[in-house]
Image (cartoon, rainbow, N blue to C red):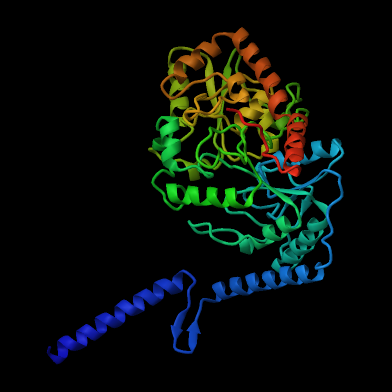
Length: 464
C-alpha cells in the first residue's frame, strides 16, 4: 500500500470513529478519552437531577425504616397530570362522597395545553425549576402517608418528577417514585389517552377498518408504531393496578385483568355543560333567518392534519355541507380549533348538529360535551370487539348518530331536514351523558373499582 493510500485509509478510519462518537454524543452518551469523558452539559444536568432525586428518595426511605405511615381507612386518591378537565371534576365528585380526593398538576397553567384544561385543585408548577422540584418533593412525601391511590394520565408520564418521564421509544426509565408509593401500599391507576396508548398500530388498523390510513401519524415512528405503543403498554401493565380504557375496544394492553373498559374517569359536570346555558353576548353566533348550523372541531388542527390526511374526516364534513348549500339548503359550517374549553360549550350549544369524528370508531371529548349539552351529535361508532370480547354496555346504549366519510352527506341531510329527530337525538344524548359521564356517575363507579383494588381484586368483573 502506498503512503498516500495508507494516509487516506487512516483518515477514513478516524472519520468513522469520530462520526460514531458524535452520534453517541448527540444522544447523551459520553465520549471516552482514556480517563477523561466529554459529556453534553444538558445531559449532565439531567443526570445530576436524577441522582439528586434518587438520593432524596433513598433518604426518605431511611427516615421511614420504622413502620411506614399508612393512609387512614378513608377512601383517598390523588389524580396526577391534567386529563383535559376530567380529573378536576371527578375529584370534586369524590369529595362529595366523603373522599380525600385531589387533582394535581405540574404543568404551566399558562402553557399551550391550558386551553383544554379547567385547572387543578393543586398546582405544583413554579417558574423556578428549583422551587418546582421542591414543591413536587414535598407533595410526594405527603402522598406517602395520605393517599391510598394515585391515578395519572399521559403516555410516558409515569411519575411526579419530570426527570423520570419517558422520552424514548423503549419507555425503559425506572419509575422509582411510583415504586416507592407501591412499597407503601398505594395503588396506581392510569387513564389511556387514545388508540396508540398500549395498542399496536397494526391491531387498531385491523379493528378500525383502516382508520390509520387517514391519520397523519401513521408513518411517523416517533409518534406511533407497534414496538413503541406496546412498550408503553407493557410498562403500564407492569406497574399499574388499574388501566382505565374509557370505552375503547379491547385491543392489546387495553384489555386483560387490569383493564376497566367502561367509562370511568371521563367525568363532566352536568351543570357546567347545561342545555339552558345563557350565551355570552360576545360568543353569540350570527345567524340568518332559518339558517342551520353544523359544528365541527379539531384540537391542534395544524399539528394533526395535512392536505392529504385528517383522521377526523374534516374534509368530508366540509364537502357535505357545501353540497347541501349548493342544493339550496340554508346551512353553514362552524369550524372551531383551539378555542378555550370553557368557551367552546357556548358554540356547541348553538349548533343544530354537532359532528365529532368519522373514522375512529369510538367517541371522544367533543361528543361527550355535545351530548351533555343535549345537542344531536354525529360520530362514527364501530360497536364490534375482538373475538371473545363482550360489547360494552356504554357502546351498545350509545345514542350517537353514526356516519363515516362516505355517508356523512346523507346522515347530515336527514338530520337537518327532521327537527323532531334532532330533538330526540339531543334528549337521548343528554340522558346517556348523565348516566355514563356525569361526574357523580363516574365517581360511583370509581368508588366501586377502588374498593375492589383495596381487596386485591381485579378492577372489573369479567365481561366475557
